[in-house]
Image (cartoon, rainbow, N blue to C red; front, side, top):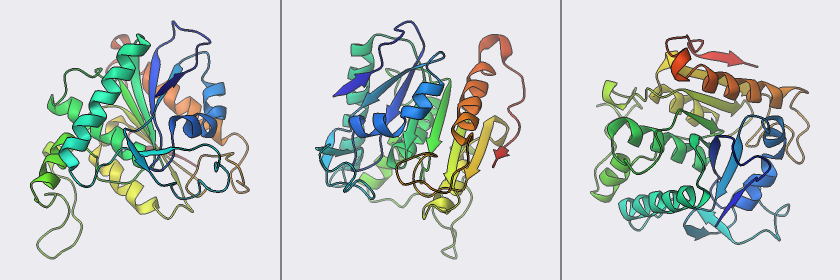
Length: 262
């Protein structure tokens, strides 16, 4: 199932991937402030993950009546699961019929977002859009790419996971993603360090990093008492900037080399 805001069908699209154990409906609710602030720039398309799952962290009791819940990951067969994910996304994009420029994901959906950008760079799936940018919200790592799923299915350890001493190591040069991206993290998020590691997979000259005084949610979410007024507008401005500076007539402009906004 997918859902689209039909206010202006001529606007470029952003594909939106929910967190694990939620849904397109829930993610649409969770991002309503961001959607409102970007309503003149983009149309948002929300898609359900292909695999039913139990409710994710923080889903209950707020979204108790919003099931079923879905996931982007299929542990019994990671590669088959990721192929299914991409088919679901291709179907949703085709059904919408619009021009897709970006992909935005939260938590598990943020990791999936990074994986789609990695696929684009390696030419893994030519039937998905040539994404102009990605937005990773409170995401973990590593990118859930087809290559990663292929290695998982073969029982191979991810080559960037540890060094010879069992310590987490930096991504290798061929793992760096050269697609413009915005990375939003919460300083109180238990997955904060995972998000900081994810951004290491991206070209630092094409990244905008932002950290806010929040937990594992967006600023202004239900129950949020720590974010500041204007935080969502900062995210909005970063998304507009990374899109505008990536247009053909603006290529070559700097992305801020890892700009961080608090």
